[in-house]
Image (cartoon, rainbow, N blue to C red):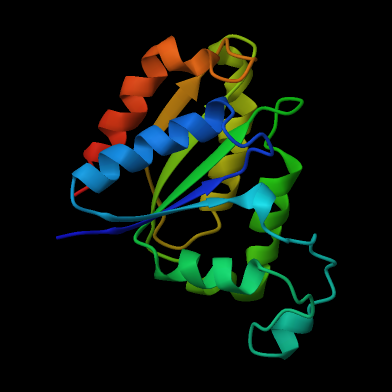
Length: 179
């Protein structure tokens, strides 16, 4: 049975290393017969959560009118969510963090998801640990979340350096394993 896969590419550098890995993951998931949508978070208008809790008093409708409502609905509808970010000071980037924080409007509806994580950094693999923990922190708040795989794209900085790394094949194969 085909699954709905939503890839949230957090990189502000379109065509950067983590974004390239998202494309490889997507390629594999499509070949496995899944429905796949990739969203470049940096191209979307997503403001930061203001903690006003307007959403709590208004049926999950956020006071901020931007692209987040449509993305949140896609997250609710997806079977699989891929979170991807380059490492910024040993954490996820601001674009993806804003998106995660804004799920508060309907966070209890984002449930029973398979999660995959993609992270890239200029450092060695140890530089990715805190970023992965940020992803896990979000998934810990999602009822029925299941961590299914991680792609560690390490020792890459310049755009395209990931192309000759093992993470490329790993991303493709992990996407292809979704059934």
